[in-house]
Image (cartoon, rainbow, N blue to C red; front, side):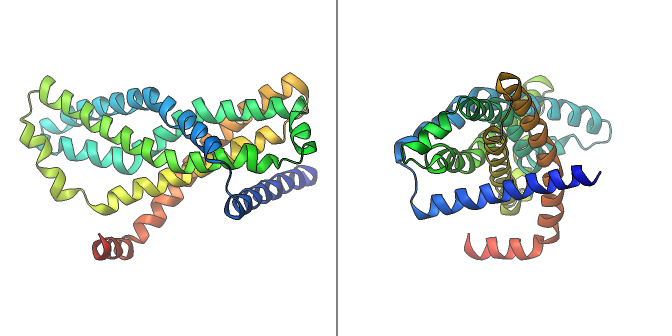
Length: 263
């Protein structure tokens, strides 16, 4: 038991040290724009199809369930509001993070893990190139920039999916679906989704890169590290989402006043 605790503490310490080193390297001398651009394309543009499918299908299911559950209670007009709120505040950031973890995070971990076990990272260091600046910092910057944008795209697709089901399938009037949105959707809802997406992007990139860099044991080790990184990312995202929700809701008045003052 004591040995496991020390191993966990050692892993957490190394993880925090990696984060501090990457942030310092990024702020001290950012990596080349070409490296950041390539990673932004990999993380953002290539993730658009799976994010679009996820957002659209989630919106359709939300609309179908909301309309079915609320129609006999005379509250079917709230379908559009429920779909939009759920996508912006909770499901959009979380499901987008899950999809990016499976598509991007796993690939990053496997790539870095393979480079570690084949000693390519040591070769990069021997050529006087900082592996953190060359390999990690571009992924870090791309991840925290693209996750919020992908989340916004997922939310838009979810709202479109909910609109299609509610209006074209159930016959709801378009105005009934859309009119409540400007009244009840606030800057705080949008801000909450972006904050969660930013944090989730940070979590995905740092954990995936850390597990990749700490890979041991050849090809089998790469597989284990990739699987562990995905499971850990999913778990941390779910736990972090809970604490972010509690924290943001507790700070609603302060955040809302700030947003209303400056926006």
